[in-house]
Length: 73
Image (cartoon, rainbow, N blue to C red; front, side, top):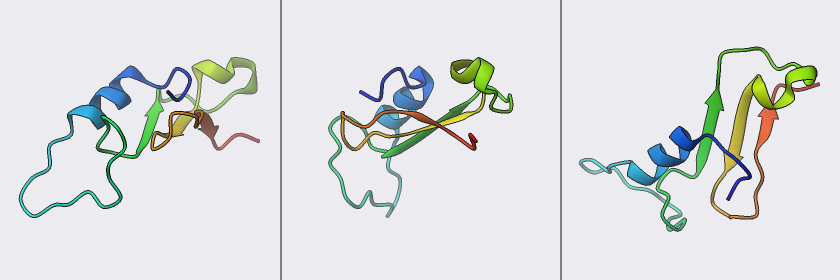
């Protein structure tokens, strides 16, 4: 699933609680309730530190999707 995405982002997607009249169109996505996850450590993306910097995105609707950094050159 998403090749090493943020554990926190995946946990958030699994544990999301639907409240009131809120709906989740397009479901199901397996155990996940939020289809897109983002993770960052606050650093600007640096190619030299590719896996340790920048904001990362993953579409978890399909297990074959892979994560990738946003804002890279």
